Image (cartoon, rainbow, N blue to C red; front, side, top):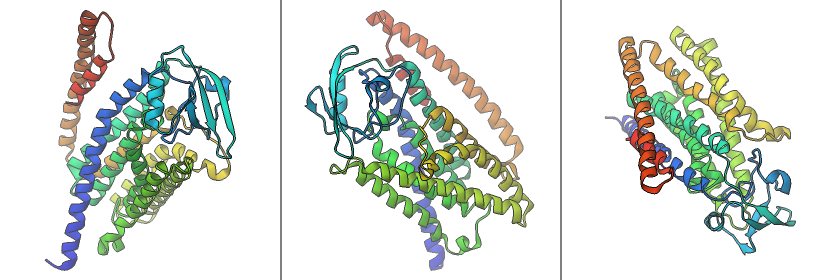
Amino acid sequence: MTMDAGKRDILERLSWWMTLLACLTALLACIVAPLLAISWSKHPFPGFMVEPTLIVNDSDGDGWSSHSTGFSFGQRVVRLAGQAVATSAEYNAMLASYEPGQQMSVFTRSPDGMARLYRVITLMPFPSADLVRLFWLPYFVGLAYFVIGAWIFRVRGYTRSGRALAFFCFCVSVACTLYFDTETTHGGSAIWTTAIALLGGTLLSLALRFPEELLTVSRRPWILGVPYCISLFFAGFGLWALTNAANPWAYIEAWGVAYRYTALGIIVFLGMMFLHAATSRSSMTRRQARLVLLGSTLAFLPIVLWFLSPLFGMTVHFNPALFLPSLVIFPLSVAVAIFRYRLLEVDTLVNRTFFYGIMTAILAGVASGTITLCQKFFVAVTGEKSDLALIITTLVVVA
């Protein structure tokens, strides 16, 4: 074995293990996120949400007290009910000690040093409709990305393009499933920040190897690692910003850089797909590139506009229902492009579709039946319904 072949083999193994690590991280996020979200939703809600550094964000909803009290993005919560809060844990613990309907005062400070006291904030139950909009919708998008990524990793994980696509799916899965956590419990903020930073590097790396690997990359496979190194740098910047007590607003710029890097990755990926579709000598490659170009344009256009809006002086509030569902189109289009053209037997695809269709129906029945039985059990024991039934059902379905 030559030295170049040895280095190539090491890079292949490293790539495979990193993808597996991303898979396990996404799986853990899919399991833990509902538990955190349901638990937090039982706490009294002050009518606004905060980021990990206690900065009031721009999330909004019908009936939230932020409409009438004047809370705005950028204000940092400093005291609740006269007591200083410096961390997310202290903030959530203080809210958990109250009951819906009770009142408290909130003291905030803006980046320019201006302080403001909100003397009377009435706590309220967190609206169930907003839990669906802000958690369950992103969560199921993330769950879909995890399933697609796991499938691709299992079937095509021995190829560079397959691993890159699976890794991207796992990063998106983490970003979606932990989206609500970044505004509530903040337990997975570091993982979420890392996943967001990795999206741009993954797309740039995927653009270099799909649907056909560039000749330069074939000769120097280490080039594929450069976009990831840049992503890791941005991830480090984001993690440092989350712990920067001297400047709690630093995370805004750190996350913004990661967003713009992701937007760059999307634009470069679309450009490479257009180039392959127009100039490739292989008719199969042209067909694959055209399919992926169409799917990725439909998937990424809304989120790219949101990523780039600050560059044009525009303020666009992030709406999960508007920006996230279309993202599922991208991995599906790439998966079809990989598997359709003589890379997977049609009979096998049909058989698996039939099998997984039946399994989906069975799991739906199991979920419905388990919820009913668990609710009856808790009613019989405690006299009232419990969200533990939903948690137990989630664990059963995952198992």
